[in-house]
Image (cartoon, rainbow, N blue to C red):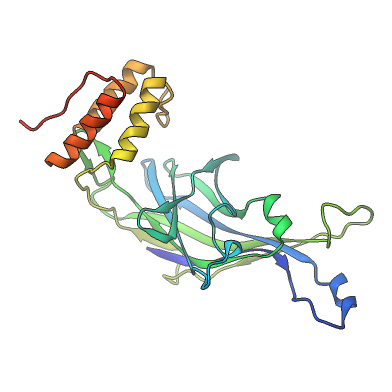
Amino acid sequence: MEISTFELLAKPIAPAIPGAPQLATVARRVVQGYFLTISNLEAIDLRYRIEFTVSLPIPADSNKILLGNAQLIVDVEGNNTILALTQKPGDPKVYRGFFTIPAHKTASVELLPALPGVLSASMLEVRGYVSLFLPPRFKFPFSVPQTEKPVRVLLNPEIRGTFLPNGFPGVVGDLDFDQINYTLAIASGKALNMIPPEPGLPIILEPQLVSQVLEDLREGNLEVSSVEADNSEKAKMLVELLVQIDSNEPNLKAINTVMDKFDIPVRISRN
């Protein structure tokens, strides 16, 4: 479901005006981020996917996209966790991240300018809209909806920003900081919302993804979320994942080729 618009900034609050250099002293820079407060009203832990659809600049402008300019953070009970912010496959205007909110807990999801890097360019300006989903979960041997019915969430989107003195952090002396904070309109027009679960689908792994998973397994670096697993457990989970793959011949051939490359004595075939 669509939540709200968003705007990330790290730039002067007003453009430079020729012949009026005195205005530069008041045209401070603003560093502005997006904050979404989410309350999970259900009695179970839920995993969400948040997506940021960017208005891609024409012509291309590296200061008007999220790639390399932003970081995604989730804060549950005061514990900040940096999330992977990745582009949706095949759609360069959509960036996404995944996070879990325990039952009856409230979290803050934050899309922030990547400091201090964006300060050097001083012209970050990214706009778009935000969507929230309830993706399916893996359950051997399928992916299945997390729930049988829509889930209840309380939502509050905000913009928060800080005004920085010109030249910061390379200036010293009497520094002047101010802050802004305002609530954004919610697309549904209400704070209490229902998010429908996405259906389960056959899992098709691209060979590049399989290659990375197998390499991590071989080196003992495969990370399993929320599980302190040894290599035998990781191997079991990998096997369970592999058997969920769409069993068409080109897909199986690609996976077996990757296994040959890493000297893993496992072959997958159709019965």
